[in-house]
Length: 297
Image 1 (spheres, rainbow, N blue to C red):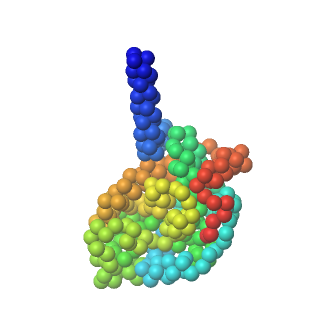
Image 2 (image 1 turned 120 degrees about the horizontal axis):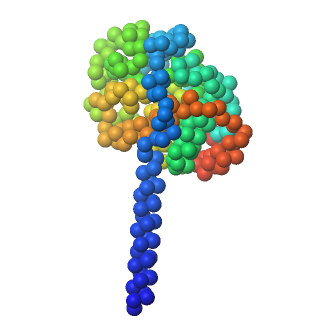
Image 3 (image 1 turned 180 degrees about the vertical axis):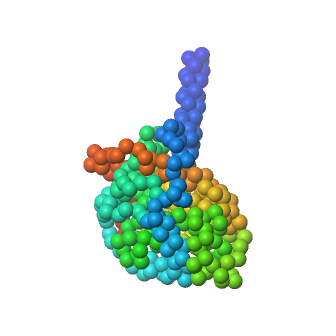
C-alpha cells in the first residue's frame, strides 16, 4: 500500500503541475510585453509634428467617413468577392502599399506584419496571437479592391452615427463632415442606445472592419484574436477611453485583448528589418494551423 500511495501522490503532483502550466499558457497572451522595455514610447504617434501627408490624410478621412458612405461600403462588401488566395499571397500583394496615415514608419507592409509577429514570438506569445499579428493589416488589401482612396482603408477608426469624440486625432477636421451638423448624428448617442455594444454600432469603414468580416468565418482563431483584428485601429477607444457610453460587458473583454495586442503593433515598427523569405517557412506553418489554403476576399 505505501508504494501505491506514493505513486498516487506523484500522479497528483504531475496533474497539478500540468494544470498550472495550462493556466499559464492560457494567460500568456495578456502578460506584460518585454520586447519594448527599452523603447521611447513617447516617440510614437506624434501627430502634431507629423508630415503634411499624414495631416492631409486625416483631413480627408474625417470629412468623408459619413453614415451614408458606411452603409454603402457594407452593402458593397456583401455584394461580391474580390479575390481568392492564401494568406502569404495576400501579404505579398499588400507589400506595394505605403500607409499615408502612419507617422511612425515607411517600411513595407510585409515588414511591419513580420515585425509585429516576431515581437510576439520573442515574448513567447501563443501561436494564435503570433498569426494574428502577422495578418492584422491584411484588410489594407481594400486599397486594391476598389476603394475610393486611402481614407476608407487606413488610419484610426471611430464610430459613425453619433457625435465624433474629441479624443480622435485632429478632431477639428470633423467639422467638414456632413454628419457633424446633423441633429441626430451629432448627438451623444446618435442612432444608438446606451451601452448597446460595439458589435451594434458602425465603425468607420476600413481595413480593420473589412478583415474582421473576411476571416471571422474562415479561421479557427479565438474571440480575442478577432477583437484584436477588428479594433486595433480604434485608438480613441482603447487608448483614450472614448465611446465607453456605447460599450457593454463583452466589449470590456475585447478591450483587454486589444490593449494586449497594441504594443506589438505600435512599438515593433522601430525594430530591425526582417528577412521575409527566411521567416516564411515558420509562418506558413502557423498559417496552416488556423486558415485554409485559400480564403475568399
